[in-house]
Each structure stands twice: as C-alpha cells, then as structure tokens.
Length: 118
Image 1 (cartoon, rainbow, N blue to C red):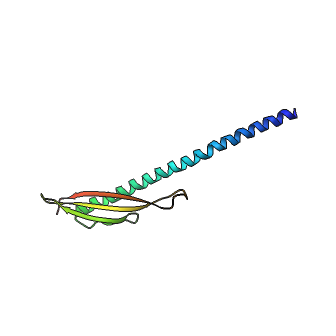
Image 2: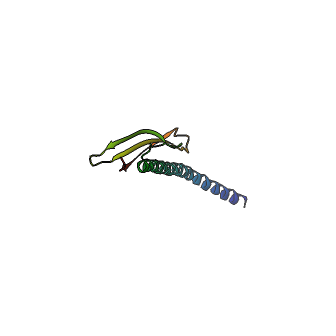
C-alpha cells in the first residue's frame, strides 16, 4: 500500500511541474499582449485629445493648447488657395509601461483640421 501511495504522489508532482513549465511562458506572452493593449489605448486617448484641441483651435481661431499628457512637438498651419488654412499638430506622449524590460515608450500622434475663418 505504501509503495502505491508514493508512486501516486510522484505522478501528481510531475504533472504539476509540467503545468508550471507551460504556465510561465503563457503568462509572459499574456503580459506582453496586455502591454500592447495598454499602448494602443494610450495612443488612441492622446490622438483624440489632440484632435479635440486642434478642432477647438480651428473653430474659434485660437492657439492650439497642449494638455498635461500631450507634449506638443510641432504645430504648423498651411494657407489654402481658396481661403482658409489647415492646422497641423504633432505630439509625443509618454506611454505607460507595465514590464521592467521596457524602459520608456513614446507615442507620436498627428492631427489636422480645416480652419475656414482665416
């Protein structure tokens, strides 16, 4: 009886060690996939906030303001032949990092709008 119990417990331990060997790479892959989701969300959020600032500047003929999250890199406007101008804004955002493997990520976003008041 004791011999059978020992072999059963060894079989249970062998199976749990194998499942850990499979689980660790899956968790690593999941964490990198989740990092990509977080980066994508940060990129969309910065693009939407930047686009709303550019639209507000185009509607009310005011200067494009940069919010706390968005560092404005380049701001320009181009005059059009028929009247009006195109406002172009580019910005950099420091993306949130979940893994210690990645030190710093920057997300570049660009937005433009048509200003018919000018």
